Image 1 (cartoon, rainbow, N blue to C red):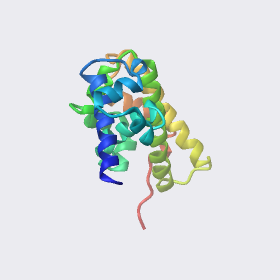
Image 2: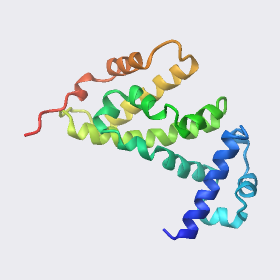
Image 3: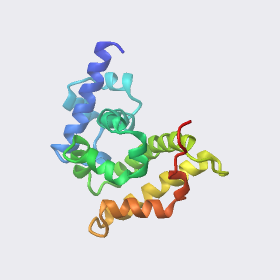
Image 4: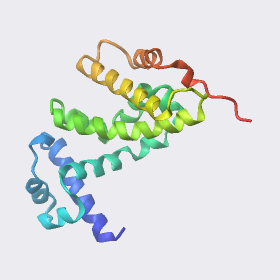
Length: 185
């Protein structure tokens, strides 16, 4: 990718991130004009790189989540809540999530983004696991939906359950046999 393009995209992401975290503006209320003004980038430059602020948010989330994908797949799938917490602790991602508390549009975007990536993860994991006579894409969708439902439930009252308990609930809700990986031959 050309250096100018990368620089413009980074400036726009930094501007959106700062508006949400430092200015404490809700994503749903931020306009493209505000992002461009903060980034000191012309509006036409914004639209050269992004269709809308949602694509910019997705770009930024990809930047923030890069290190998460370095956590081994087995760890991410076997203890999704524990490892998510390990990743988020003290991160820019956590700062972003806290700043957007109460913005349902932001959390809808975050959920959609997360579900898409987690489904890819689940499919990879399922392919390496025990053979099950359920279509793998259906099973992956179900597992990710269980994670999202548990997260939403926990977000309403984090004092209800620890992350260890959430991982246990997750394993009890989904088919535990999927978590048995056959030995490598």
